[in-house]
Image (tube, rainbow, N blue to C red):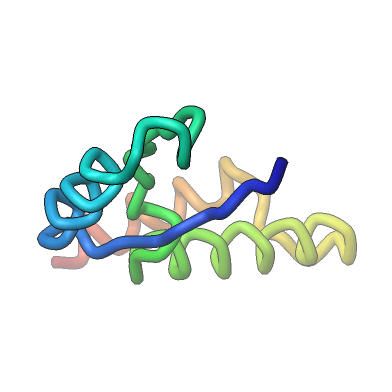
Length: 81
């Protein structure tokens, strides 16, 4: 038995399902539609990934600003606005 994986645009899923359902009953033993999480392909994901990778690198190099110092800097910035 072979497995085939298809990636189908959301707007075309009905067409593909219609084709599958109209095949002879012994051609496909089973199929499943899986909704993909689009977050991992989004710009937000890429930005977060880059941020966390940089933070991890800073932690390894001990160049990350301690949390309390960061809050003090933020408080000073807010007061200056």
